Length: 132
Image 1 (cartoon, rainbow, N blue to C red):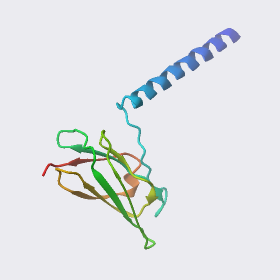
Image 2: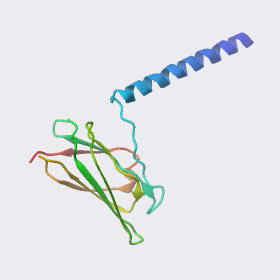
Image 3: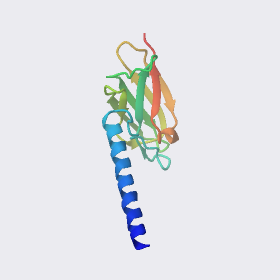
Image 4: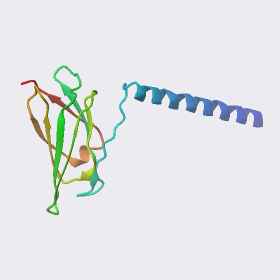
C-alpha cells in the first residue's frame, strides 16, 4: 500500500511540473498574455488598468498612447499613462481609482474617449480603434 501511495505522489508531481512548464511556454511565445489588471477593493482604492488595443481587423496597435484619469470622491484627481507595445498591450501604473475616463490616441486612428467602471479592471479592458 505504501509503494502505491509513493508512486501516486511521484506521478502527480511529474504531471504538475509538466503543466506548469506548458503554461510558461505559452506566455513566452505571446500566445497567452497574462492579465496585469487589478480592480480596487474599496472606493478610492488602488487599481491598475491592463489595456488591449486592436484595430478594426483585430490587429494589435503598437505605440498607442493611453491616459487614465481618475476623479476621486474625496476631491483628488489622479492620472496615469503608458503606450502600447507590439502586442497592443498597455499596462498602466497603479493609481487611486474613482470615476475613470480613458483616452487613447494613436497615429492614423480616431481618438477614443470612454468611461471605464473601476470594478471592471480585474480583467483586461479591450478596445478597438477606428482608422481616420
